Length: 290
Image (cartoon, rainbow, N blue to C red; front, side):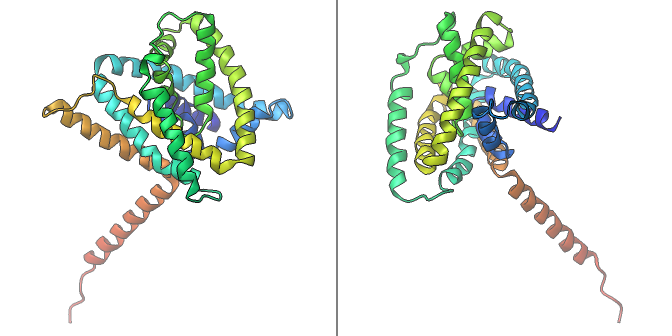
C-alpha cells in the first residue's frame, strides 16, 4: 500500500508538465531500486514484480485521475496552468543539479552541459515544426508514444510532458487517457513496456560506469526543454492575468523546491517551529516579585 500511494504521486508527475515522475522517484527514495528492478526483472522475477506491481498500479491510477484535471485546466485556464508548470519545472533544478554533482564532478562537465543544452534547443525549441501535433495517430505513432513516455519517465529530471509536447504527442497523450481511448492506449502500452525494459537496462549501465557525464548530458537536455513549457498563449503584459500568472509561477516554484529536498525542508520547518515555541515560552515567563 505504501508503494501504491507513492506510485500515485509519481503518476501525477508523469502527466503534469513540470513535475517529472523520475525526479519524484528520486525524492521518494525509489529511483535506483526501480531502475534496477526493471532492468533486471527476469533475474529475480518474483521479487522484482512484487516491488514494481503496486508502484506501477499507483502510477496508472495517478495518471488516469490527473489526466482529466490537466485536460480541463489546459482547455479552460491554459496561461495560468502553463505558468504553474513552469514554476514546478524551475523548482526541480536545484535537486537535479545536486544529482549531477554527486560523484566526481569538475568544471569540464559544464562544457558537456552546454553542448547538450544547445543540442536540445536546436532539436526541441528552434525546430518546433519538425514535430507537428499528432491528433490521429497510426499504429507506429501510438507505439512510439509509449516508448517516449517510458524514456522520459525513466531518465531523472527529464519531464515527460515537456518531451511529449516537443514531439507533438502531449495533447494525444492527455486526451487518450482522459477519454480512455484504447485504440491508442493498447499499442502505447506495448511501447511503454518494451521501452521501459530496454531504456532502464541502458540507463542503469550508463549510470554505473559513466555517472557524471550521463547526468551532465541529461541535465543539459533538461534545461533545453524548459522554454517549451510556455506557448503563444503565455504572453505577459500589464494586466491582471499576467500578475496572477507570475504569482502562480512563484507558488509552483516554492512547492516544487520544497519537494526537492522534502526531508531537509520539513526538518527546517520543525526547527523553526520549535524555536518559535521556545521564544514564546520564554516571553510568557513572568518575572518573580522582589
